[in-house]
Image 1 (cartoon, rainbow, N blue to C red):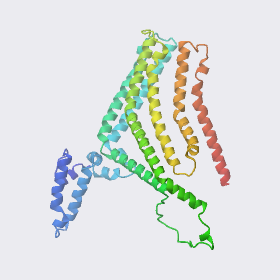
Image 2: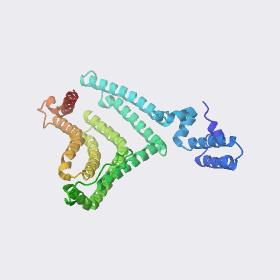
Image 3: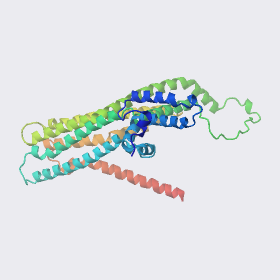
Image 4: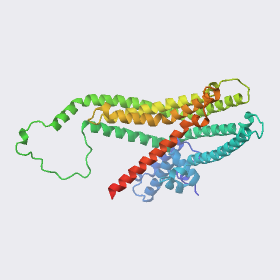
Length: 392
């Protein structure tokens, strides 16, 4: 595969900087531009080749693909699944595949050693038994650091372009919603033929109808609606930005707190410290507290979007948004509530207040997700049967 042809077209080395590429392109473009060489028929094709070389090499993502696969890779990168040709993306996938396999093996080893310790097959310390788990923690930490470094290398290439595209799509959607509030409808590319709009006899003297009165009332309230939607949109975007920042920083923080929980648990089980169960589980509850903050910000953004869309309807905003808000809040917090309740029950069982309870009762919150999913499948099946009955 030829991976030096485009560099030779511009007359630069493979390690040329963006400034060197730009200077070489400007010099050659001025030299071979068809307007400056009207009589030379071959200069036009050469100018197109120079422009193509600069378009490929000036884009970081396409340049990485060209350096690995040549022009064939650049052509395939524009098709579906072409993102996998990016060496950084393929490296990330390889890293995840290796780390997942290694972590799975280490977890199997940990649970095997833990089972033998519980069955009194050995009297090893828990610090030895937890060694595979700590090794997995270190491996995941290295993977997270590698991902952070490679994400930094992806800034300015295809990933940032996709982010810009999603942002522009969001702005376009907001503009369309504002046009809907104003009563403006986008032009139909295939408009219907004009119809006779001549009023019926006596209709011109009928006065203002209920629909016209409603439209006039909406026009009077448009400025206040716009102001409310702008305020809601500003707060929502601020919440979404905070969610994005936390989502980037929390994985490594979660891992460090999880390692702290494992260390405190080992110290407690081996008898090095005389802590309470709640103190041992403090790092775990810190993880849940951070996750609660993240979920609350996500819920805030979702509730604000529901309020924004409610302003587009003519119904009472409080009455029309109450049910969707409750459903969104329940869907956001239900799994967090189950995890925290289960952790508190286990801690109370081990600490003594609930020592008389059976473990089947202690783990009762863990059964609720299965019940919820089974109910969701049942209602989905009922809806499908109703749809098939209507179709017949």
